[in-house]
Image (cartoon, rainbow, N blue to C red; front, side):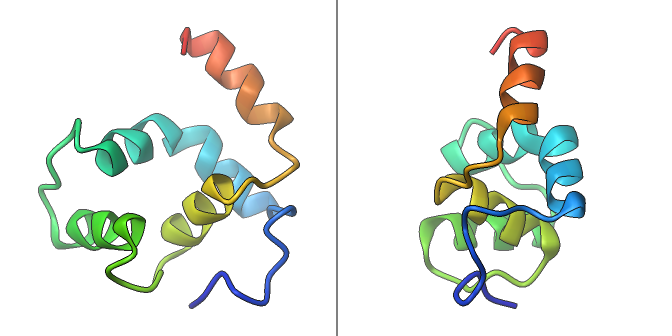
Length: 84
């Protein structure tokens, strides 16, 4: 699974749902604030650092988010609710 070839400005409904639900968790893993405790989480961190290719919908959604997806209004609203 790769992000290349997909428009980074467009998130699927599923990707928006994943970001809405898991963005704080993704950010904590990517920043090192949260230590990965599973093989999947360790792979996610490797993907975030560029050491591995994305292999899950979570990884693709987060990479698209980081690449500057343009349809993130819903995420901004959720972040306000969360106080972030």
